[in-house]
Length: 190
Image 1: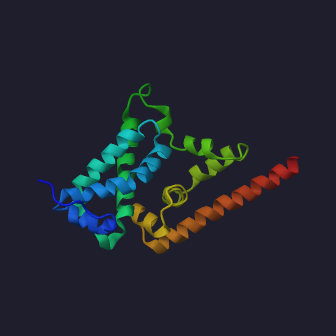
Image 2 (image 1 turned 60 degrees about the vertical axis):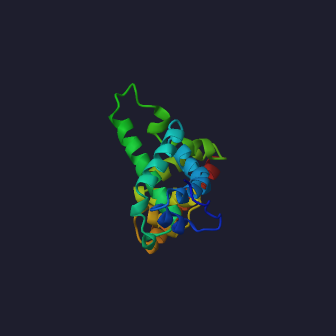
């Protein structure tokens, strides 16, 4: 027998705690966060995003008892689960025989090129983003694409919020300086 539905105004953190003993409390989390998590996965592994989203929810449900509100918001915890599922996906894809690896999922940065408005800047910006240290790149993309706060992104990658803000600033500065250099060069060539 199913208990009463969970009201929409219950915060995510409370839902995760309730879901430890009342599985129906997990359902609102799926409704609230599926679109954002799917977008995160589509931008990184477009061919496998639907399957990966299912895996994210299976893993999150299985690990709901491990959620610790003291380590950050529930949304950041869910993106952390998604990040781990994605990492395992890429590890499996890398182990596949070369003919079997889906190319669109093997290189998550192809999606960056398709979304840039200025096609001439795309390859250089892609190179610069790919050249960022992994944690800086992930923080930048979590904040820019997934619209997580720097504190939420910090919880996803497992660094203190102050460190995340510093690394995010450094990543943005590198990209901004690189784009300024590129614009200057284009102006000289014109």
